[in-house]
Image 1 (cartoon, one colour):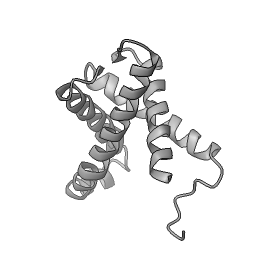
Image 2: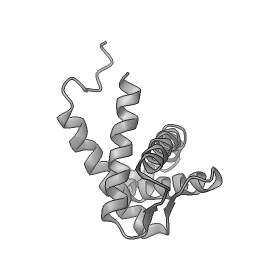
Image 3: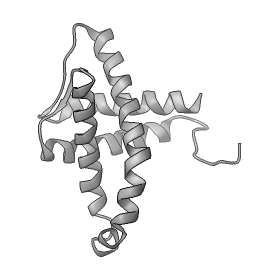
Length: 129
């Protein structure tokens, strides 16, 4: 149940990025199609983050230290851009047009996701369950 909630939160955060950032587009026949697309892209984004981000953080550990973690913003933007490329390969109507929209979009997704996680009662990331 927790995974589904996280997917929905990510989908809402992605929707916010499409609404706020020029260069991140979501097209579709109707609202239901766009919502399903956002859910699919949220799953892709979660998989990209789960599979690639730890590798990048491990290999680029020195950059994280040297930049006091600010390189993480660039990495998150690149991961969102990669998610767009995967969505394109799967014929999903979600597109990020370049690095800067991806950079700002990743910031929006991070902030909106964080706020939504705060608003959900009992959604802490403790593994004590």
